[in-house]
Image 1 (cartoon, rainbow, N blue to C red):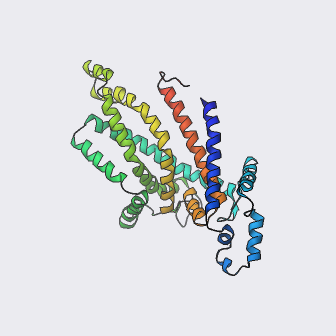
Image 2: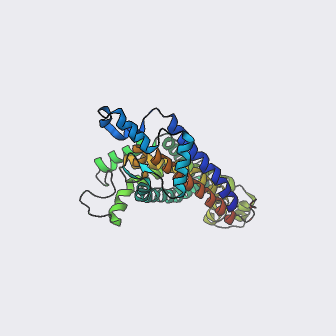
Image 3: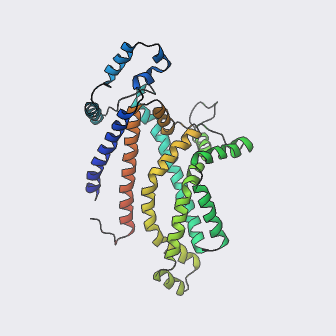
Length: 317
């Protein structure tokens, strides 16, 4: 299965990178003028042409793509025109913070959804179930950046409990664990809340269906405690499709992290992605897109392996 997944990943990565180059070529924005900034209004056309020649912008698109692909195989992702540094250095300095944000938010989502969804399924039709579903639908309709702004207005500006943004305090001379953890409470909470409705509703429906399965009814008929029936039988059955949801929902989690990082001014890939898009920094955009695709493919592979490990009946072909 791992071999087959890797064979599928090759054309997926090829199509993703080629699509990025095709979109870049279709853009009406001149990268040389974007790089020059305000000086482009006074720079001569000869200087702009020299910049294009140095970067190979005027070459045919297949030539540019093959040159970039060859550099990629050598570990060279190009030069970021918006950050004015190698793309590899940009990813190395910021990818870790994005992974930390996504990982912490995913842990919060999993724990909260399992607990809330299971309780709602056990009290299906009750006031807790109705209130939880109403809240989930309401949160699902709200953009994550609006949740971030509302959290800043309430917890940072009005109550003053938490910092409004950044990774450390202004006076900090380093990145202490306690300081970073305090600054990540709001971003992690906002990202987790924005992704929580999907998981809560899925667990609620899955566990509610499992409660009507024969083995769960038999366990209840044997007089087992309600907690044992709920968490030891119904929840274990409902967890199997939940593993698939985690893998398929990861791209939305990464997309939400981009917005959350921008709102809270975190030094992750979110801010540089927005900056690269506004500045038409195609080398950086292509590298971030490719890296995100690799993470999603790896997560889907891990999900398949976890599903097979959790259910021995699964046969992988």
